[in-house]
Length: 540
Ligand SMILES: Nc1nc2c(ncn2[C@@H]2O[C@H](COP(=O)(O)OP(=O)(O)OP(=O)(O)O)[C@@H](O)[C@H]2O)c(=O)[nH]1
Ligand SMILES: [Mg+2]
Image (tube, helix red, strand yellow):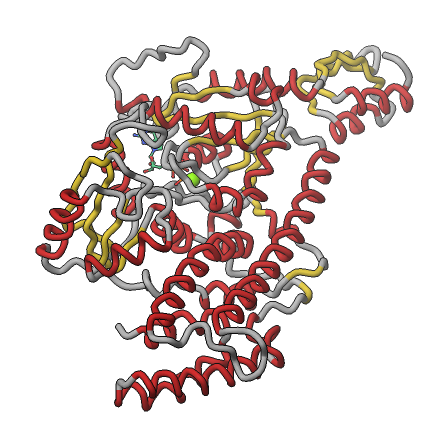
């Protein structure tokens, strides 16, 4: 692909009205293929860009702030009878239109990955020592996870894979000279591959460019593959905005690489029609502006969440966040605990990208809200987590955390370490960390499973085994963490006391004494509600 055509592939992401202008300008140079024509076409395009960037910028981004519209096309998982996403309670606050977010989301589809088929060659650099060495896992398991990531995507297949040792993971080529040469030969001899997936957290733009030149195909890292999975699974506006934000660093690297290519042809650092800015600077500025707009839209959604949280608190429903490594069975468990048929567990990584909340009843009849969260993954790039921080923030504001582990997974110990690390980075309050319930799921896949950690609860969410014990543990912790009281109150049946309690507390049991016209009512009640009760009806 020529440099100009490559630039054309990502320029529309930034500046829609320019696409047409550029194509018109570039058409003759595709026929002639001379450097002068490239430069001339670029110049014309730059003028268009310059004009458009000053007059139509806000339109190009499609990001003007306006009233939020309710939509009816929610997915079943977010619109189930008891579950609701944060979006479902939106009122008239200022937000982006759904169509605008969708437009932004579609504009940003990375041209390198596209929507079609990919046939991949996976390379896993096995770091022999140093800070990047993985001590808790093996190269084979890391490779298996990379294959799992690829297989989670429709139309993506693994053609071949190789684990190659390296002592220099920080170097541009990652591998030593000999290994790099033999890898290059192997890749070039493998027929029909469309891309190489280098299983590292993030490749520098320089490495990416070096590899692409050496291997003649596109190169992905974990960041771009995981982001693509996110992109395919995103349903709500918030998820789409978070993904768009996480894609900005990719657009930035691509911009850098393309400009370096263009510079080699003597075009990248030219000023655009008297603006005092080079093409690179204009593109950087547009990217920055796009980033700011996404951040501000997300900030608005974050404020909305905050409001919803305080409303939930006001309603005094305890909140239980269910978290864990991706595919461990969080959604299946919540479905089993709430009977919410709208939830759709899937054998897929990152099936859940949006926080959904589902009401369930504990054996003591207390209503709790279970929050289904996005799964964790090892070596998830920092920027990706940062983009999803608003979603993960919900975890911090729960009354209880339930950590679900897929105990049948060969990497289960490593996955636990990973989840705990992410929680540490999220600065989860100590009270939540110490009261967290650990659940060992998928025990049906192991004969006679005995939990090595005595405090962990063995369950099978799929076969609905061990759920009573789990609910009792949740009950106990919730009563402790929310400071709720379990009281036997004597009520006079001729007063509204009983109906008040039904409304403001959880009534567990009513023993009527017909002769006295009273009843002893067992309730779970917050200290605040008990105070109001006493004030209204007196001490009893
Ligand atoms: N055998 C068995 N499979 C289970 C169990 N719980 C969940 N699964 C399966 O594991 C796969 C993933 O389940 P989900 O509930 O979607 O997992 P998740 O943690 O919500 O996954 P993400 O949202 O992708 O992070 C599905 O195929 C489930 O049927 C279990 O107890 N036993
Ligand atoms: Mg899920």
